[in-house]
Length: 91
Image (cartoon, rainbow, N blue to C red; front, side, top):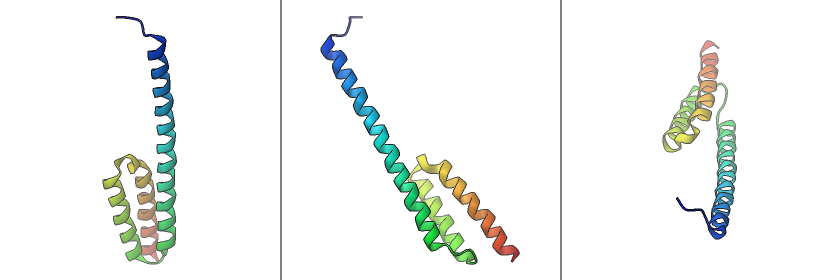
């Protein structure tokens, strides 16, 4: 195995920097998507309206289906809806 030239090392360093920047950008986009989803749920769901819960759950399931990387976060939100829906049924 031959040693890398300084030009190759610089190219690898530049590539590593670009990968780090892409990863940071991905995290910002994911956070933005997460914020929009939370805002959408907050705006559309009335605590006493079971139909709204069902619609929100379907929406979250669609998000999980289309963006598997957000499954863990969406499942936490879905669990919140299951609890709230149960409370509504008790009223």
